Length: 347
Image (tube, rainbow, N blue to C red):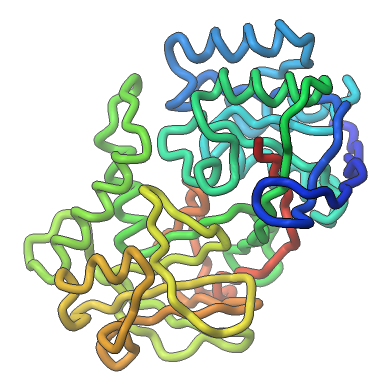
C-alpha cells in the first residue's frame, strides 16, 4: 500500500461544551467512514443503517474486516480526501486502524482527528472518548455537523500507548493493556462467545468480575495469579504474583469503572492487585471507583501509579484492546511508552 501521510486540519479554540476554551474543529470537513460489519455492535440491522447513513451524505465508505483490509480502507479514504476518519468498529478495529495510521505518519501529533462510533462488543475506547448513541445515529449527527448543519463539536484527547513484546520489536498501539485475570478473562470470553452472539460491554466486564470473585479459590476457572515484575522507566523490579494488572490512558473503563488512584506524574496509568490482597471483595467498590482510602495500599497488595514508561517482565500473554501480545522474556521485558496524543471528535 502506498504510504500517504494524513495531516491534521487546523484545530481552533472555541467556547464549547466541556469547558471554556475546549479545543474544537470547525466545519466543513470531509468525513470518511471505515466500517467493520463483523463488529458486535454492527451486526444485524445496524450494519445496513450505517451504510445508509454514509450514503445519505455522500460520505466515502470503506468496508474492512481484517487488519489488511483496515490498512487498505484507510488508504482508500485518504484518496477520497477524507480529513476525518469515523471508525465504525470495536476496540480491535480502532487498535488496528491507529497502529496503521501511526506507522504511516511516525508521530501521532500529525494525525487527523478521528471519530469513534460505539460499534464494538465491548466498545470501551469509544465509550470513553467517542460519539454517544447508536452507531448509525451518531454517524448521522457527525455527517450533518461536518456539512455545516450546526451543533457544537469538541475534542477529547487521550495518550496513545505504544506496546512492544520486547525491546526493538515492532510496536502495536492502543489504549488498554490487560494481563493476569484480565487477559484470562478476555480469552475465556472469546472462547465462550458464539460467533453470532452480541454481548455488549457487559460480557467481558462480568467475566472480569467473576474472575475477581474466584480470586484465591483453589478451583478458580478464570483468575490465576501471574508473576509480573514492573519497572517505571528502568529495569523491572522483583516479580509479584498479580491477580489483576492493567495499563491504560483512558479516563473510564467498561461500565464506567475508574479503578486507578495513583498520584504520580505521567500519562500512563497502571493498577495491580496481588494474590492474597487483603479484603479484595470488601474493597471491590473502592477499587472500581478509584477511591483507595487507607485500605488500598501496597502493603495490603494494592498498587496504582502513573508513569511515562513501563517495563513488564512476565511470560504469559497480554491483550491490547483485544489484540493478543506474547512476551519474549529471553529478549527483554514488554515495554509500554506514551506515543503521543490522539484527538477524537465528540458531538
